[in-house]
Length: 112
Length: 112
Image (cartoon, rainbow over all chains, first blue to last red):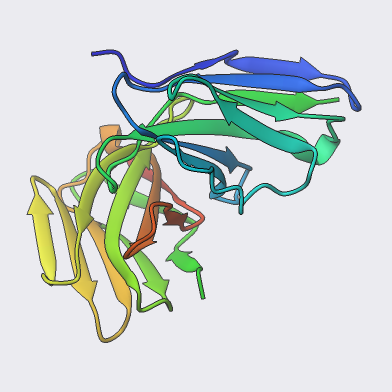
């Protein structure tokens, strides 16, 4: 079936603007993760959703970052008042079993 | 304690040679160690994974070696091919947790 999809693939915004990034997980996957990938910094965990449980927000770097997951499927990551240091690739992953995570292609965010 | 340290940052190997990437960890609660492969413009994809109850796992040309006492694990790519040129990430997950902790990645270039 279809893999994890993310939109947009690229987003250029001005400093101070809000942005929304979307993730469509693999159908039936109960877990959804957001990561941030900066050049040379690997993958930084941001937030984790599992079913109807409260999300694990322990990786969110500031209160400008938030995410929601509607109906246990699609997720939106919102960054308010974007800063230049927010420029990165934002990756979404989903999983059915606890271990194997399937990643989307990412959204490349550039804050000017 | 949650870190996974990966080396080298970059690696150039001749076609047909052996590529070796190393990772070290401190958290003894980690019990799942996957390796992900990422091509430019794509999300990471699970390559191979190991649990601490075995010291080695082989899948085709890819082998994970695991040393529990040293808290180290490594990826060996035998007969490296230009198509293996990618960024490789090691990761670890603790028992009872669902989030992965990633190393910073190794950029592998296999020269023809």
